[in-house]
Length: 141
Image (cartoon, rainbow, N blue to C red):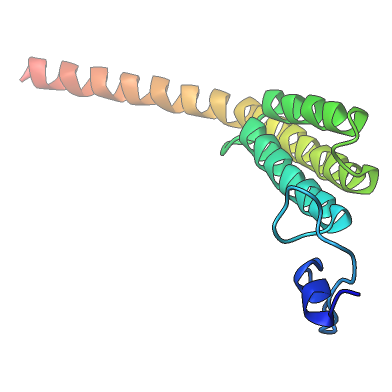
């Protein structure tokens, strides 16, 4: 019969939030974790890498093209089973909000250009007329 100490040495080292330790044997080829906790760790690491990849695709300056690429990557990750559908839905919703904000900004820029461009052109013409008038007065002296 194996003693308690050797059994404890073969146990998974994962500790739950309440302080209990996993009772499963360590996975062969892994020094610390059982198969279950090792796979959960791998999933978490994979999700973190996937999140970084999606963030890189969007980029610092959010543009529709970047959001489209991120959604393509998100679709691929969900299809491969590497992204939980609930998290994918959240990211897709945030993408929708980003695209709506971008569309609002484009509409606002168009409205502002429609209003301000004629006004600025008129000011430039008036300034040109004033400059020509000033130049004519100085020539006449």
